[in-house]
Length: 115
Length: 110
Image 1: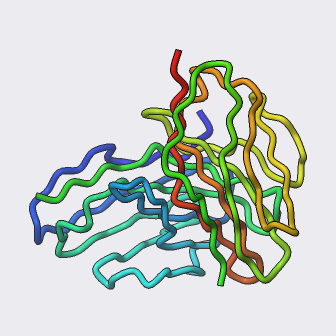
Image 2: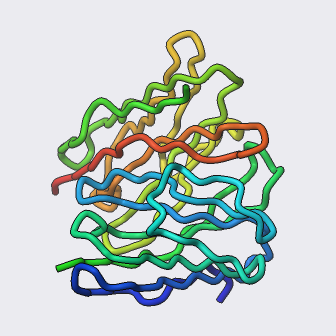
């Protein structure tokens, strides 16, 4: 299956803990993204990496640290989790430079619940 | 600054009724617009892009630069159209990104 995959699908944890979400794409894309979808279904970009290089950081708290070991992977590590971090986190990928012909392919999402 | 506005959060119609999901944008550059859809318990996926001027699953959307709008329309809604719909603007330049509207939930009743 060619797709964007994320693990885990669900993550329930206590406030103050540190957790990671992993994302992998096998579409051969050079750009990957993390989005946060809040309880009101509002979808907002957090980070974007192109060929392992950070190109977008949308004023996300320092507790969030993305890591891209190669262009097929973009992981998200979150330190000192807070209640407000509870959301669904989506990973996506695309091929940069295609302009309007770019399509972002999304992963299935990781539902993070902070208690 | 770039912004995408979907003024309505919810729309409920009966099967066979026409639907129009509104989207307005604000962008200083040349706008590139998309509609993404998220069916229940599925991932977000591209529905259509303005440049291709295509009809997908009976939906069409026309870019109106004068009104800065990109409304999504379907003449006869089906139950399987029930989903969250997001209008998105592609910003250009070095940090190309999609700016999403807040989304709208469409419910098509039998």
